[in-house]
Structures are given as C-alpha cells and as structure tokens.
Image 1 (cartoon, one colour):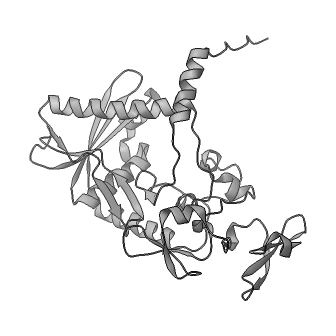
Image 2: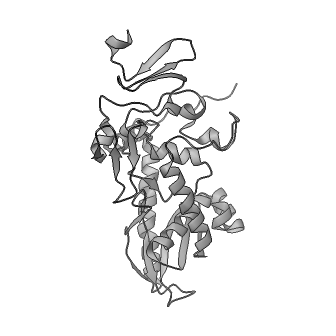
Image 3: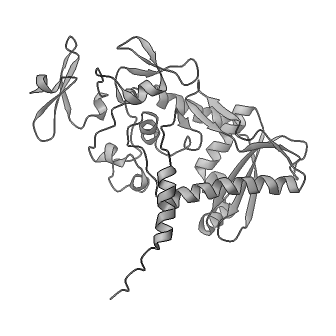
Length: 312
C-alpha cells in the first residue's frame, strides 16, 4: 500500500488562499505577443474572442508568477552590475492596429558581445529540464513562443538584436542568447495573426484527433472538441468586428457603433452567437425577428435571440 500523502500545512494553505483572494482575472484586449507564435490558429482565435472562462490560478501558481517578476528585477541588476545600460522597461508593444499587444522587459546598450548595438531585452526563467533544452537547441527550437515574442518586440521597436536571458530556477544557471531580427519570420507571423483577427469564424484546428498532444494542454479544448458553450460577450457575437483602425477598437453592426472594452465584456440583449460556436446544427434564420434556430445533439430545437417566453 502506498503511503498516504502528508497533509498540507494550514499556514501554507492560508498563504496560498491570500494570494488567490488578492488575484485579479482579466481579459486581454488583444493577442498577447507571448502567445502569438502558438502552433494552433484556432487556439489563438478562441483567446482573442474570449470564448473560454477566465483562468483561475492556484495560490502556488500566483506566487510563482510573482517570483518571475522578482527574477526580472534581479536580471536587470545583473546586467547593470557589468555595465549594461538598461532602459525602456515595460514599453508598450502595439501591432496590427493594437490587436497584438504586450510590453517589453527592456532595452539595452552596452551588451558585452556588441556594446554599440541597441538590444531588446527578454527575460525568462525555467526549470532544469527546460533549461537543458534551451541550451541544447536554442530559443527558436526549444521555446517557439519566446522566439515569437522576441521577434515581434524587435519588429515593434525597429531593433535588429534581442538579448534573451534565462535563469534556471533549480540552480541559478544563466543562459544568454543574442537573437537576430528575422524580417521574413515576422512578416509571415504578422500576416497569420491578421488573418486570425479578421476571421469571422474559428480557423481550422491543429488536429482533428481528440488526443492530439497540444490539445491536451489547451484551455479551449472543451469548446473546441467537447461541445462546451462559449462565454457570452460581444466577442462571441456575430455582430462584432475587430476594426483595422485605432488601438484595438471593436465595433457592433447591430447598433452601428464602436463598443468599449467594458461593453464587450457585458454583451447586450441582442447578442447572437457566432454560429460556429454553437454546439448544434443551424437550420433556420429569421432576420426580422433577429433569431437563429439550431437543432441540438439531443434533437431539441434551440432559438438563439428569442426570449424564454418566445422559446417556450
């Protein structure tokens, strides 16, 4: 018989709960540069359209995120200790009319390998297993999300080099890599992201197999492959459109107006699901009544846009 696990300390549990109580969950205004080079177009689209519930993190995870922020400050101090001039921390990244967004960890002059070249700074931390892969294969192969983030940051600020600096959480080993700006990679990635942003329906899945490796870790799997319902927000409504002007602006064709961030989260009584997000078959549309009828998997009819009384 396997030994019973030791009970978690009440003190530790209280600390974790305090982190959870203080945590805030929020929707991203656009596609994060840290997720932009993900392998699945549909995963990016679902995040952009706020389809899944907001993630709630355990206290241990929240504490780990805070540790990452502390480590960033330490890496800045390490660079300054060897004479590197660090500036521009948290400068905003805005691409594709503000629909691709992020902040940089900083910029630097005086990097030892090329002191006269301005560098973007990208700081990360990793466990020993991940660090071994980064050292072996480099950022582009081992951490494609990090590579995409570095490339988009360089593109946004017109820089030709990025200093990718990683610390190992297990033994404090440091890894540094100077990444060169790849214009072709960036232009292809930006074209892909613009296509995803402008897609009125979910793009193709990375795989139709239910047990595909990447899908097992995707928070959108319930909606994508398990017939879950999306959140009701303006972004899951067929009336909404991400505009290609301004800073991440959206508009509503139903009300012929721009929709603010707060309005997008609330949705309105005339919300109609993007048909591809409904786990049923569309069989009818009534434009005058502003309803769409679906046949659900159990055979019943469901009318999107109808009040409960009308549906009855």
